[in-house]
Length: 178
Length: 215
Image 1 (cartoon, rainbow over the protein chains, first blue to last red):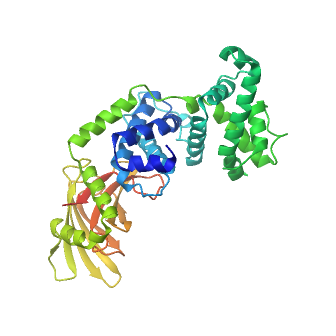
Image 2: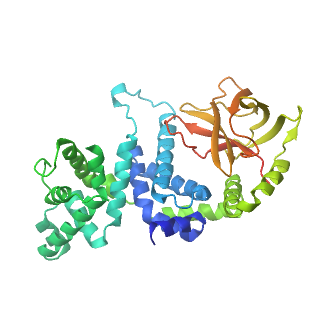
């Protein structure tokens, strides 16, 4: 289902539309909630609020308007709201040192994390597996070949294709920074 | 999408520094940051199993119990698909939402009711046409002062979109809020009040606490 079809399906508020959007974007929603909240349980709450708020507001998604940035706004707001509610909760027993008070990540940081997660989730599964082993687990191509029980040439070719795709999808982030 | 062969090569080679690959220092900084994010556990984390089931169960419950949000969504869909009937809709809505002429032809009253976010709250908006625009006195009752980090924002909504008509906090308790609008009630027939976080985002949070009544 392409992005326009996905948005059309979601706009109807149908269960199928919600499920399809969840499958495409739940990873990205959960990632930015984790970056803001730093806690899996709270991040799950924020993700749930995100999809419910998005469903409740699906009629406001204008035809032709991209779904991903619209959902990002809802997800970020849900996470920040939860962050603030937690920040304004009962006073801790031990007073916080000013130096330890953390601010939520900036809009730019959250947006970058969102785009990177979406790019990773758009990779074919076999390429994503190699990228994950390389960057997340810190393995070499030889170690990946051993772990995944495949020829090292296959690992290298998948890694090469995957990084080309990632650079194509994320290159604008480097350009913006430049 | 932009083709960045140097970026692909840097990310793939796993080099510690992007210097030999990046065309300039700023691009090198960005590439270093991207590489860091690719290794960040948050970037690979999966939501808990069962979250989708919880979401769909909540949606099913809400479907079974129509809410204010459902009403708003139905209204928006109707506006989009039945453009030709907008004038008739507005006329019907005007009757039902309680627009009552009280102080001559230039003044109207609109009744607002609390949503499930503020079920005890209510308000009456007195709209008075002036040469400068629409002067609005919003008499608010039982709306709690906005919590720290939040404020209230009033809006007028219509088929053309959403226009803000002012912000307030009610920290002094119930009372009257003075608002101004450059758009007319005929074009923007719904008045709402939302709760907004102080995050610099000018868009509505969608957290409606007061809304004028709908058919």
